[in-house]
Length: 268
Image (cartoon, rainbow, N blue to C red; front, side, top):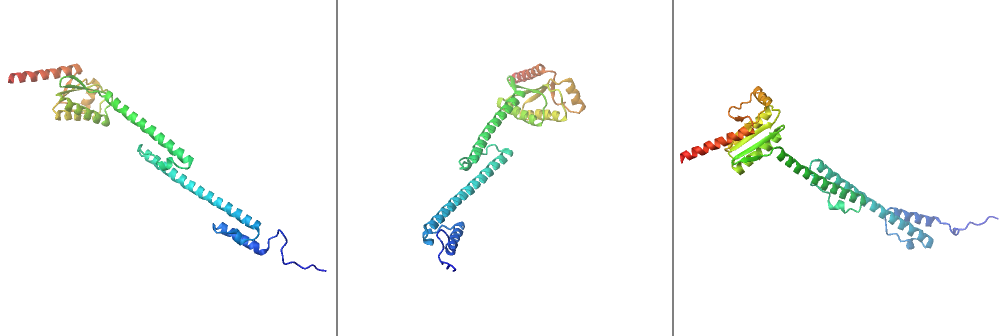
């Protein structure tokens, strides 16, 4: 005798309606809807508990995704600002710094990177300032301007004189002439072993610039090899007073000053 099929599902089994509602609730959860009410959808406490737990897990996962996205954005922004700062440094702008947004970032890697970069830039800037200061001191020591007598300056030149150095020498010499109201300048080139057309041109311009300020230039200490080179390249020093050495140059300055004083006394 055949048993009759019961319309009721066995205990522990899900009927088609419950399964459909469960899938519908899961789809809503996946789509991010937070208006799911398990107690209204299901009478079975077990089903309610399952939906609640799945909804809670989905919410936690969404929070994690949001947090990951935020960290990713902060990471990208922090890296972009650090890279921008490095590009500015490459252009020679050592004063740039990474902003507070990066330094106080929730991303520990970005925060450490930003602070390390700023500290490094400060150290590099301080070192560059030290180097610049040393360069200035070296330039002053390499070309000292000495007042050896009243109204007499001596400019001993040693080594190679290129365009940059010649400009520095001219600027410092003209400043000293104006400040000390000097009437004579002895340009001693005993320490110059090689002279070419450009170097000779630098010296001629220096002498003319000093004369425009009312100072008379005397060149001393021309080496034989330098004299031969100047003659070979056709440098005209006819209007320039040249003396054998610094001592002779100073004597010439004193002689001229004595002559001027004698003329001034006669006029009185």
